[in-house]
Amino acid sequence: MDEKLKNLLRAVKTTAVAAGHAAGRAAEATGRKAGEVVEQTKLSLRIIDLEGAINDHYREIGRLVYASKDETVIETSTIEEQIRMIDEKREEIDQIRSKIDSLKRTRKCPNPDCGKRCNKDDRFCASCGAVLE
Image (cartoon, rainbow, N blue to C red):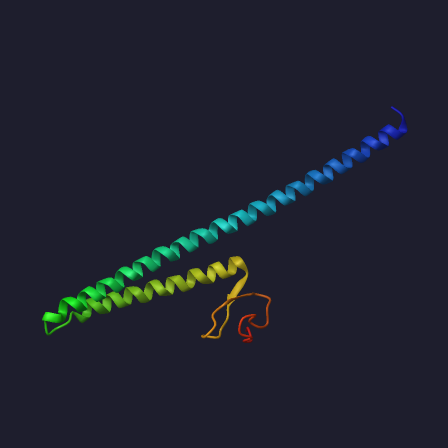
């Protein structure tokens, strides 16, 4: 082989190796992102399950209150237990939302009237202008 052909083959080989490395890095990044999306989806589904359970507790409280219309005493201990379970589920939902924010690299606006999600690097809420701590 003459020298020009050797140089051409060497350049093609170098380019192919670089392209292979770039493709590998892209595949890794895609896999990592897909894993994050799967995790976010699992967490979101858990929130939906918890919200459904909370609605069941609300229905039970309503049933207990309605059943007490003919009685003079309301089973407050049962209602308090339902309320306690609702509070526990709300706390779990808040924890899950924090995990989702961490995965998405966002945070909740501290303004109680807003509550929008903002980028972690933002200094102010894009929706209401509140200072993000």
